[in-house]
Length: 313
Image (tube, rainbow, N blue to C red):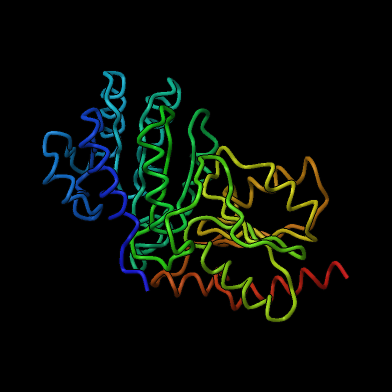
């Protein structure tokens, strides 16, 4: 079982990239500990800015640094970065297409028992509606490494959500091609397609494996980039399989499911089911408990997939 959280991998990549490029600056909002940035601080003390608990200011400062030729990465809890400072994200970063990378840590339901105030289950919906802003979420530590290596060399503003706890590997290795905006087919199949993102990729793979034992062929697509969405992968799945299920650690409104539905509604009549957090203040509990309650778990996904297959018979 993996014991390395994605936020630690982010820190390791930024430390390496920051040593090679002194323009890379990390800004935190009293979150260097929770972001696992100790290695970065020790190695590059002149390249970190501690703003304190001031999420609106941190985005404005990062924008100013970017306009001065720096390559800032803002690292702050996702629930606050994506809500408290959203006007600054829209105006200071996206409006001028400014190269600021906004990293929301402890995203989704990672804060567990702290409940709705600390969950970030609307961040994908909000950020993907802002022009010029890329939106992405890695599946595991290997993809986190690939993603941040790529981000260190791009000039587009982006919002990236990371969880808090280690997640089970989806890839198991680092030797694969990663491209922002290009989905990864993790498993081929011709009955049903499951499109997942972030920490829901591993449960989706487990679901496909269980159903494979029953003779149901499930394609699993890792949509690590929500915006720009890989529409080609969605349309290919709509054409080649009998139904699409989207799975996300997010509200059922406006996230991955909404993005996929927008593509399908313009181009296909394929059956589509959205699995996510329903329209209510989410229950409190650890990630595993919340995932199971809302169906982000193989136990539910297996049944839903079976039902979708039967609807096509």
